[in-house]
Image 1 (tube, rainbow, N blue to C red):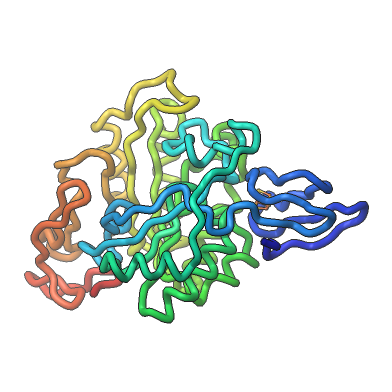
Image 2: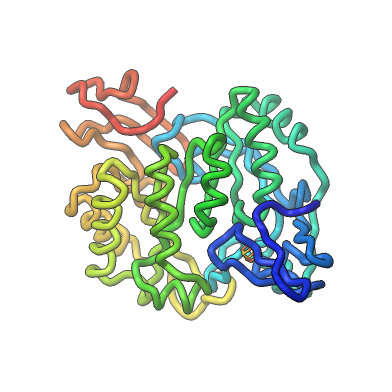
Length: 337
Ligand code: SF4
C-alpha cells in the first residue's frame, strides 16, 4: 500500500515525513524502520494490516493508570521500529526487519476485523503498542478512524518520534498515549536508541496542546539514566511543560537484548526516583514492574487517601466517584468512565 506523508525528491528518491528521522530513501531501499520501501518514487508501507501481535490486555499494562482504569484494551502490533534501543523488551518483533535481513512477518487483517475483535472482546479501547505504532501509521489511522465510529477509543504506546504532521493527522482519533521519555540526556538517546531527544520533547508538548491524554514512562537503567540530577531534570520538564497532573511511570529494567552487562534496577532506585518526582510537584508517580509496591497505587493529591488500589495490572478498590476522591472530594486528574 502507498504510504502517507512522503514527498518525491530528485533521482527517484523520496523523503518520508512520518517520523523525525525524515529518511531520504533511494529507489529500491527502505527507511531506518525497515518497513517502508521506495518503489520507483512511490513510498510503500510493507506492514499494512500485517499483525504480528494481537491480544486483549488490561489498559493498566500500557501503562495507562488514569484512563478508564480496569477496562480492556485490544492491543495490536506489526513488526518494525524507528528506534534501536539496546534494551528493547520486544526486540524479536520490533527489530525483526533489522536483525533478520528485512524479514516481515504477520497475519493479514483489515481495520474492520480489528474493530470487530475489540467489540467482541468488550474492549473500550484499541492500543497500538508492543512495537512502535508510528511505523504502522496507515493501518493505525484507518483502524482508529473506524474505531471512533463505534465508540471505541484509541491509544498509542509510543516513543514519541512521530512528526507534527503525523500527529496532527491522527489527532482527531487519538484519545490517549503513553509516551516513553527514556532519559533526559541527548547522549543516551543517541547512543542507546539511535534518536534525538529534542523530537520526543516536541511531540510530548504537542500532544498536550492538542488535548491528547498523556502519561509518561521512563525505564530506569542502572548506571545510564539513574543519576538523581537527571531524574530531577526529567521530572521538572514533565511538571513545567506537560503539567503536574501528568502521570509518570518509573519502570524497572531487566537485562535483555543487547544490554545484558548490568543488573536489574534495584527497587530502592525506583523508590528514590518516585520521591524525586513527588518532590518536584508531580501529583501521580508510579513504580512499574514491581508488583505489590506501594507506588502502584493512586493516592489523592489533596488528602493522601488511596483512591485506586492496584496489584500489577489488576485494579482493586476504587475510592473515587465521578473523578473525585470519596474522602475529601478533590478532583483526581484523568479520563474516567
Ligand atoms: S517512518 Fe521514520 S524511520 Fe521509517 S522511513 Fe519514515 S522517517 Fe524513516
